[in-house]
Image (cartoon, rainbow, N blue to C red):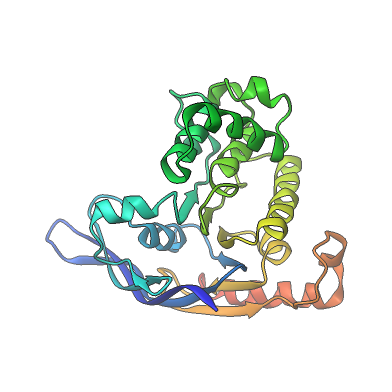
Length: 273
């Protein structure tokens, strides 16, 4: 059963003469409830714009057309007040850069507690206690201290974990993750990928994970949507075998190596004339 259905989604900007400049063209796909789907493509192909169109947070000057249905509710054209209630309560997004995932002028605890008060109705004291517990759950050491820290006082990996605590472990059913680990160092990135997989197996959120890393996609997802052309207008869906154990060692299996080559072959179409 699908949680999100996208049909004919387009995103365009206007040039100086008022002519549309397409950035996403006629994209269609669905996200199965409780599954991790990876959207893979080169930088600049329109992956992030697709996610932003789902949440209704497009950059100034961009417009969306087509259909985005969340739990059979059409999102394109909804008033901003209605969309703002859905963001955080039913769907949320984590961006690429750890420093932009959290507001630098508020403590980590304030930001997590605000989400809990707004979307779960907790009182401030209870929300702060829950925020500390969430930081512990995502593996941040000394959560009683870190909950009072500002984002700049945390490492990149801890900032991303705190951002996940605010989104993945609260009420949002749909998570849009826009290359959330690409700004991290290699070892932290591997650790965060494994942590995300553990959390997904525990909470079964519906996730759209955007990346340009083929191995990351194969490790995390049950289905990979590969961008064939830039800007996005053709997607090829490549399912990952259902019985595939989610371990690093399995990426070296012959069937996974062959699947990786298939993905790379589709991606090469982006750079061919």
